[in-house]
Length: 410
Image (cartoon, rainbow, N blue to C red):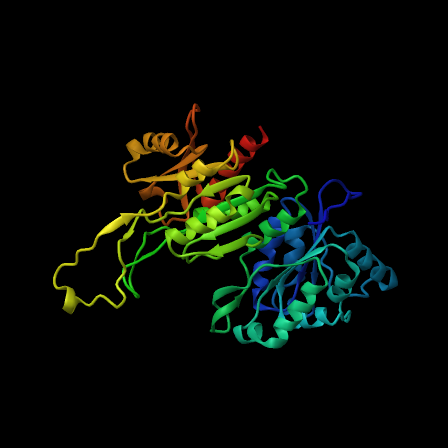
């Protein structure tokens, strides 16, 4: 990735231009400004249509700066000033990016201020599409998106699937403000604590089939593993996420390898292990699978009141990684889930001894399984356990990432 941050005459804070176009999702854009402003100077540019959804005064109040809306505001000097704003930007973010914006940008049109600034800037651009499902799926929209990406420097986040303001359900919902801001700020990081590192994360549950329609699985949501992947990417790492079937959105800026069974996850991890600097094994894999899988649906009329099956152990992915690594690389971070809080740390230490990993993140099921918040204990050999939380899982992930980065730096 090119270094997109340049020195600013006003200080070290990078400059971000946030373009807001005319979609209902524009009501979320002030939150993006607030989040970006924590680490950058943000200037908002609004299209005429965007002003029908949110007033410029709202963005001015949040950003602390006048909002740019008119190409010729202030006469010729104003037009030149707008060009300067585009040229000096370290990053452009367009959220929401409507179908009309994608079409005009693909054609290189400069019939409004945002379009003109898009042609002037040489900074990277993050676009967060938001529109009706049919509009998103239309071949013209997909063609326009492909054209834009062909120009280079274009980074896409979303859209997500879900309920839309128009009453439809499907792809087209703008990515969440937290994810957009994290993704954008990640692009600006020159000295992220994992810059240049290759990271693999496993996440979510695995499924073991009983027959063509039934599986054995667990209640893992994937939130912890996905949060680690997102934070590692934001800290400059090249991230591969091997994930089981989850109902949370994949984080932006990472390579996603979807799997279903423990065997598939083992194969995906094994294939990539030797190229990694650190592996976070956050997935809740199935420990057992049926010895045989029925070719047809198991019918209760045929099995009777009881169903007996034989199960065998699945591959121990973490132990296999420890056995195959060369020296102390990759760094291995395991996770331990217990129902008894009193023995959680001891169980984590035992896991370190048996499997040879560098850190175990100890969880208690009642505090973490399937939740958005939780608390964990970081257990490492010959070190005092470190308790983290309660906190949302992205915050827990930041502590885990920081531990790994410190260990790698040694």
